[in-house]
Image (cartoon, rainbow, N blue to C red; front, side, top):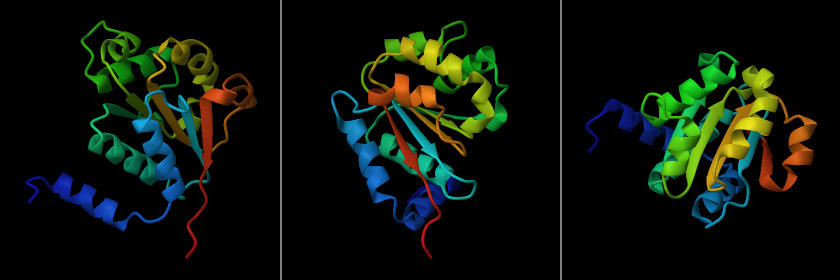
Length: 172
């Protein structure tokens, strides 16, 4: 029996989660694969269709697989590189002064960074795509969830390194 209300709430959420089997399989295979089939996963769709709920399912899969994972919500971030790096370092529990890139590189195995409400970080899109993410080891998977589809540069420059999931409202 769980001793924390948060554990009970998480279990209830998982019990209520139905569908999205293809998406969960895609992500689970990425966690289990020696080399991830993608390094960036974009989850996009209109508000209220379950993007955050799907991210929670992905985070639960990480926990079950003992894969370190960190969650950032762009609603709590200024769209500036320093703010993003500071929030990511804090989420990772990196020592003060250690960059998130160094923190990820120092840890072995698969790791996942989740960024929710990504549309609010659109001013950082080019910086993330061209400067930050290329510094990470290829064992890291980054999951962006937002209302907008990825800009064309993702689909051209990162074509073989990314996947896109377009969420739609579940059928009644």
